[in-house]
Each structure stands twice: as structure tokens, then as C-alpha cells.
Length: 538
Image 1 (cartoon, rainbow, N blue to C red):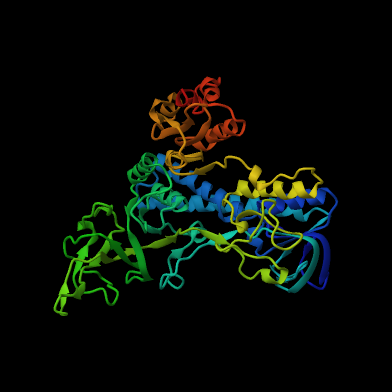
Image 2: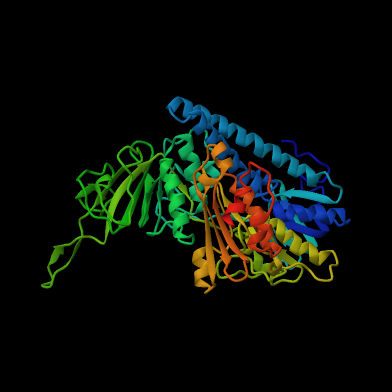
């Protein structure tokens, strides 16, 4: 990748101190869009990016675009039958990784030059930290560069949240989403800690490649924020792909396994004992009686069948508690302990705002209780002339929200009589790219009921949509919530092929306050998935 431009600082000796109109810390979506706009308005801009591998931000380098490239490659492997043998699986995975790297490299280079080649923009590669309200020091490979700016914009994004589990930082084979998307060799077995939508996307993708996937969920409910019927349909789809789930599961420790893989010590609440089998590497203190997880029974826990090679698991049932006379006695445990052996572990337990090392206190920038940069509805921080855009400010963690944050900030800088605010943002949609994509906007039935609204539920099986049949993708369901007396669309949940496109039509109707009858009566082209909205809202 070429990054040699007249406006890229390579050594502090060329300009050890810079005074500029605007400093943007982080090369993400909101920041890079704002930089281009400020430059076009004739203002001098400095962008500080910690890594040359992150020009353009999370989305194009380690987030949505590379993951979607891999998801599409995995779907192709499944359709072509390339996931059926070890040899074809490895070849398909190797080709997918190569293509992902090509796409990310190309986009990174284009994003860099789109800004760095402009006369008014200087890109500095290095970690920035505040030294005062309007001053920042950037630690480059060649030494520090001091920058003083009239206005500063924090756009540092978020980083994976790593739970406090012994061995999680030191055991080879434990990855965040970033590392798992850049493996040279495909894991034959994968354990995912966390069943949020990021974890589920990876579960679906690796299952399509042919990996045996087991997902560990810390509580008993799958996708607790979604409606029960929608969650059940998503779970059924993933299980049809071969993904296995273990609920009420807490990972207590992680360590290298004897076979070179990863061993997890897992506690499962409410599991009863099954057939006896020894654990190859039982952690100290778990006892001597072991039960194979495949023989366990529990009404709230799904366990993996013996055909899944991830199921190298045993659990200890020895537990004592005092009797009436003070002597210890054996009792049925509140939880079962067992070992789970795998080739790789994905930690998918959420993301946290990336503020480490910024020294925000030097500028008077405060954080929220959840560790995000504290902002108001105009995205202003607690320090004058400092804003925060994107994931770092604690808002919804989507690239398109970072872009909308740019609009909030720019509306204050361009002289608008009435700036656009976060409160003006309407009906944020989301999509999860599973084998059958899941998209939603607005309220679901659970939320509408909790709000005390009078509503009707609209349902349509995707199998009833002609285009879905033509595409041989009839799985899923469509669901909408409509206010009874007004016909106002309260929300929609689409588990359907091309749902990520169709959901934007529903959002537009909601933004325009169009009643459900508008979509019911709209003339759509045929055959399309979008025309299913005619029937859904009938």
C-alpha cells in the first residue's frame, strides 16, 4: 500500500509542532467524512491515526466490510459443497481470507489517499493523547509531534470487551473478531463466548465454512431483547447449520490443551449428571467424578450431540455442604463443571469505547459510567470545542451512526440556524448477516407491550414470498407491529433473504409517518422481496 504523500508526517523534524484549525483523532467514518468537508471549506485539518492498518476506520479494515466478504465466501462454499471435506474446506477458507485481505487493503489505500492527497489535510500515524484543552501530542515511530487545534474531534471507535477470565489473555488460540478474521488456517472446532449478534454472525459464517461451532451463553434466554418467536426462528436456523448452544454457561478458566488446542473450564447452572467419562485435563479443584456433557439433561440447556467434534467435555459433580450435625454431606450441585476442548475461541462479549491512553482529563473531557466519552445532544463533550463521534461516545455501534454523528457536528460548524441533533435521529435500523439475514427497525412486540401501546401484529412466512421461492431461500418470517387506531408503523422484524435491503423501505415509511396502508398499497416491481410488504401490512 502506498502512503507516500506530501501531507503525511513521517518525521517530527519536518514539523515538530503544528497549529491547525481542526484535529481529528481517529480515521473512522464520522471523522474522515468531517475531515473532507472541513478541507473543502478551506480549513486546515490534521488526522491522527494510531495504526497504518486502520486508515478508513474499523468498518473497512476489521469490521463490517471484511466480515461481510467472509460471510459471502462462506455462503458460496456452502452452496458449492466446498465445506464437505477437509481439503475443500481449507481451500475455500484460504481463498476467502485472501479475498478479504485484498478488499480491505484496497479500501484502506483509497481512504488514505482520499484525504492525505488533499492540500489542507495532514495525516499523522501515531497514538494521540491530550496535553491540554486544545493541545495533543502524537507519538509517532520517529518521535512525538505536538498539535494545537482550535477544534478537536474524538473518533477513536471501540475495542472488544475482554471478560476477566483466567488465561484469556495468555492462551494461544483465543481471539477477538479481529484476529479470527485473519487466520491463515481454518479451525475445525470453534467455541464462541457470547451469543450476541456479533458472535452469531461468526457462528453462522464458520458453520458455513464447515467448522464445528459451539456457542456459550451465560444466561438461559437466547436473544432476550428479541420477541420469542423471532429468537426461536433465528436459533432454529443456526442449529440447522450445525451450530450448537450451551446456555447458563460461565467460562471459569482458559488454558492450553494437551493436543495443542484450547481447554475451557465451564460451569453450567442447572445441569444434571449423565454418563461418566474422565476429563483429559481437569482443572484442579473440580473433583474426581466426571460426566460427559453429551449425556447431561436439563430443560433450559441445549447440549451438543456426539457428532460435534467440539464436544470434548466432561464435568465434575462432587460438591459438599454441611449437614444438620455439621458434618459434610454430598448434594446435587447447583452447577456442573466440565472441560471443553477446541481449536479456537472467539470472545464476542461486546465492545467498549476506546479511550485508553487519550488522557482525556488533561482536556477536561469526562466519561460516562459506562466508560464512553460524555456528550450532549450536539455531541459536545464536557470541554469547549471538543466533540466525540462514533462508537466512542456510547451511541449505537454502527458505521451509519458514525456517519450521522458527522451530520450532527457539521450542522454546528456550517452556520445552520437550527443544528441537527441526536434527538432528531429517527428509527435506527439494524441488520445481522446470518445465513438468513435478520433486520429490524423500531419497536418489537415485547417493547410495544411494555410501553402499553394498543397494537396489532402482522406476520408473513417468507415461504409465501414468490421471489424467496425463486431464490430457493424460503426460510424465515416477517413480522410488523402496527398501532391499532392510527395505522402507524411501530416496528418491523424481518428474518428473510435481502432483509437488509427491505428494512430501509420500512424505515423510510416510518420516518415519513406513513401509515401501514402506504406499504400495503405501494406498487412494487415483481418478483422482489420488497413486494412482500404488500402482504405483510395487509
